[in-house]
Amino acid sequence: MAQKIRTAIIGTGGIANGKHLKGLRSVKDVEVVAICDLIPERMKETKQRYPEISGAAEYVDYKELLKDESIDCVHVCTPNRSHAMITIDALNAGKHVICEKPMATSYKEAVAMCEAAKKNGKLLTIGYQNRQTKEMLYAHKRIENGELGEIYFARAHALRRRAIPNWGVFLKEDEQGGGPLIDIGTHALDLTLWHMNNYRPVMVVGQSFKKICRDGKNTGNIWGGFDASEFTVEDSAFGFVRMENGAVISIDASWALNFADAREAICTLCGTEGGIDFMDGVRINKVVNDVMTIEKPDLREGGVAYYDGNAGFGPDEAEANTFYGAVRGERELLVKPEQAAVVTRILEGIYESAKTGKPVFFTYDD
Image 1 (tube, rainbow, N blue to C red):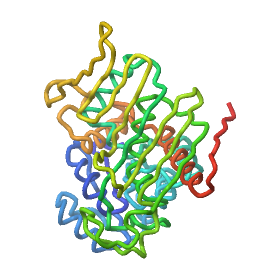
Image 2: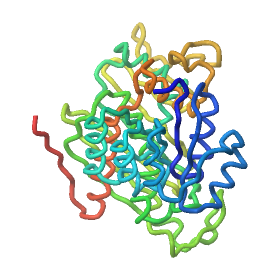
Image 3: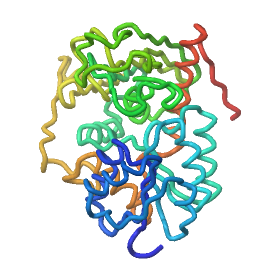
């Protein structure tokens, strides 16, 4: 690989502009040499927003972009349904890939993505940047030290009171594979599994609803109204997971719910020696000298080296630096594709359970 890494962006919508290109500005010796979008006007708008990529080649067909053998890495920032297809093609073309969350809309696709990365000897990671916040990184180190003991109960929180994304294809099931569960619930579940270091689900049961915003009017939505005829996904979904070792996880996800204490992309973890939640920063609860205590670490900037090489970065920048550091062989990926595949497996199971009214069971060959 040349000293300067040559990278490409496939999909120049909101997530590419709001996260990926923003994060790339903090990475040294990386050049965006190509971008791709089905809508040419969006590529023009992206170049206006990020003038440093004004010289990037433009493509409307990602397969043509992948023919450029000088491209080292690809960011997949398209609707969920095409994540697997584009990622696998990019890996087969010899590119390292960072794919936006969720990894895929089915576990079968996620496994195929992992297999393509292994077959081609290329790196693959998924855009779960919430692992990179100072709160999550600090808590993870405390958990790795064994301070919670055995974690046997957890909750994944992704609840909005009224925040339905009314742009792009968020409301279309055929493009996204679902609504808030696959959109924001995926972040909360990823954090939960990562902190637990537990990726062996054996059963899920769940239910989804479309109750609050059926007509698209008088919704109180912070982003305004929407076309109710295009709202083909749930507005909330809830699941329960039992793990192979007996631990359990509950998952709550909503874009619209009459729930005043809305919180998003956090989790609660309860172990034999203590618990952690993120309801007000990091809170660690335990018993000290026979007295119940709650510890609130001071995580103001400059106080802790949260993650090697990432001090001072926000999660978007930290994610980009971690990925390109791994491409250079200087660090490991924080989000492994095999971990993200389990997130997809659980979400798919909850959706299936919601449709059939029955629990979904997972088995393992080993």
